Length: 88
Image (tube, helix red, strand yellow):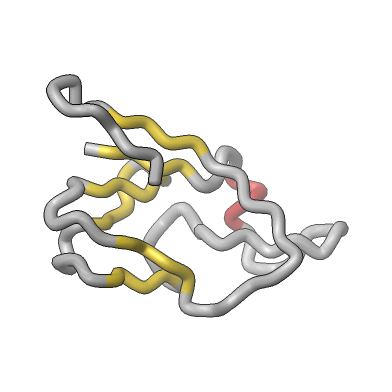
């Protein structure tokens, strides 16, 4: 199971841009604004404010909109101890 954390504080879950104009891509509650590409609907889900994937089948999660001139920060954690992880 891979965990993908896109936001670390509740202030990042706001729908409005912050004072610098940044808009969060993940609301910490659901996958609104995201598209599950080439996977089963249960492959990606939200748990404890994080986007989680079970990795089966392998696939991609992408945003509904296209963005340019952005900064994307995230943390990921690969918990499979038997196979080498791929950050992608």
